[in-house]
Length: 109
Length: 114
Image (cartoon, rainbow over all chains, first blue to last red; front, side, top):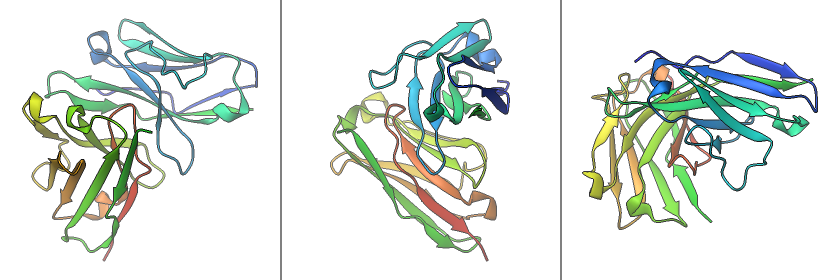
């Protein structure tokens, strides 16, 4: 399957809405998860099954999907949201191998 | 609290071997698929491989760069997953994380250098 593609960077001012897209053929058939990673830390799950949010993640994080593109949306961005974000899905043609996007660095201006 | 803790990283020469451990606690380990993911310095996340539960056949899958060099195993009685790495290359230098998706360890650093 084709890889997952993310923009290298997204920048927004505090209080604005950040949207991070992830595209790939497999995304129309498989669920996507999103991870947040801050420098020197392990990734944290912020969205799973395209749109589901773990209970410990703030409501400002949401996920959506349209065809072969999924989008992580952070509403009312805060300084603490500055991090790298990765999308992840599975390659159903390859024994459900994980596929990972290249990551997007969110900068809060 | 659900937790994964990796250990066993260190400095190894090209061609050498190393075994990483991933110790679990706070959740039903026997029902968890465990993934290994690595991150080279300054780079993105890269999936290494995964072991399914014994109830799901215990199937193990590997990414192309590590297939035939790395081996994943699990000990449900000790709640540990292992990543045995052989024929290590400089490009295997990375922090190695284990993950269930919901839970991630802090990682252990493997440095392959002459």
